[in-house]
Length: 405
Image (cartoon, rainbow, N blue to C red; front, top):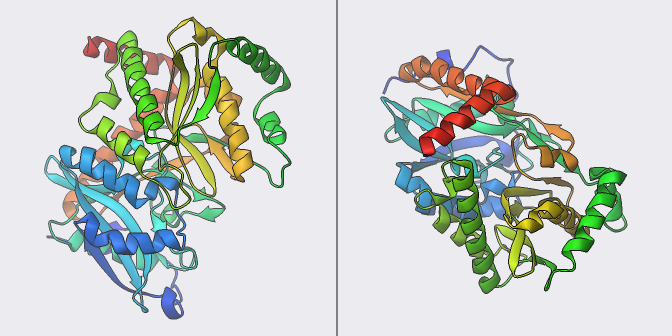
């Protein structure tokens, strides 16, 4: 394969000093089998690595097994090793063909909201641009090769650490994130909840919750037993299907393998005993009133999916009440930040007022990739423009409903 890394990975850069000892990049390997990469993945997770909760092995392995393989994605996991043989970083990529071009991107697709890869904490700020470019060149030359790296939904930083990929040519993602910082130290949940919600909204939600509290069996639940996980996940899938049908939109949660992926991930237990995907719900009156699925690490609680009842109880804002309970639980757990998903939605603004810009990278690795990169950049730039314009986005939603019908 024609490798054009020196031309297409960017302009010349300042000379970088070699890293001392075990932080120096000694070699890079590319794995097309997740099980072969698993020992190095687990090693980084145990440290723990600098990563988002969306880069865990169990989450992405479940996605690849049930969803990625069906979509024609082949693992392309890039691992960099230090001189001591220990992994310095791991990039959980997958490879697939788009027309004549082979692209690589983060595993997990739209189910992974924030992507940074996994990096050893003592190396994340020390690895040079030359090291990172060399690892991409190694990926381009491996096995079936890669023409273009398409790296989506990347935060500029995470947990106070700058993203090493941010030096590559970038453009704004189609949608940004928002979050709420949970200041420490705190005594109880009230300070963080007060920061997220105005006094007027807190008062309104207390009144609404008193009304919901009159329902038989009303409660906030964090599903821990297998029975509760299955019961609540079944309720989510059923409610989501009705919501999508009512709106005339295609149901992404009914796509092949997605229910199986979610169920498998919800049943995986992390070392501390919590589910890999946590299910938080409000129940009462014999129905699920609202539900969130989320993943979390020691830093961030991040929502992946949500739904709410279609009954008359929806007028009491069970989704906002549930988010308030989740935020209070995050304070008790000592987490540092909270988000309820990427994208624009009015309800998110009640809690998450801090902007989290996301960027995409379209990095050509061959001459073929260099021709394809401007096309990808144009498509994703257009998506951002459309989603930022209410009139244009409304037209797209109308066309989606027409197509679904």
